Image (cartoon, rainbow, N blue to C red; front, top):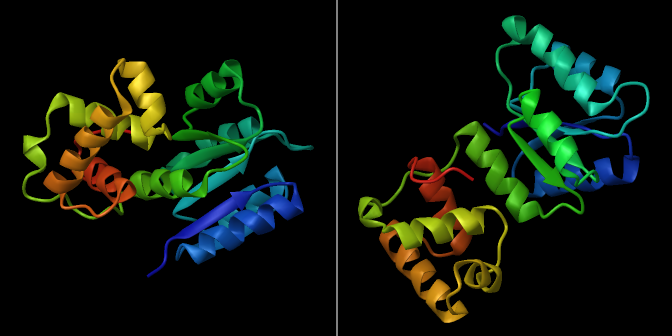
Length: 196
């Protein structure tokens, strides 16, 4: 059964793009174009995860999450991810203080968003049998990849060559029996080896 994702986004073009991308990735996507409409949608057909813009008229995304927190005893805990053009640290901290599970800046990297959604809903395939043999370097690379970093960015941060980072990533993929970087990250998250 496909997981239901509610996207609360006042920009209709952006909402349509997000819904289409989610459906292409085998999720059941619905859209609400305002905070109040989103809350009504949550009350009538509880989603498995909520994606919510912050900067909306009438009711901001922060206000939606505050209201949802008040309703939590009735609806249970629904994973909540902010999607926003507000990339500043203060907005992210406020969202996390309110209990948001994640915070994704626009323009949206849909591969990264898919990883976040799967991790938050616990729908990631189990890890391979050699997962426990991952060393600290391989785990650090997987965490950085989960956070959207390229091999070159990871190499600069760790002060090693890109080739070394790629080597660590290949080792992690082999140990996790993963064909791609994304699959390796998914398996590592599912196995509780890393947190994105």
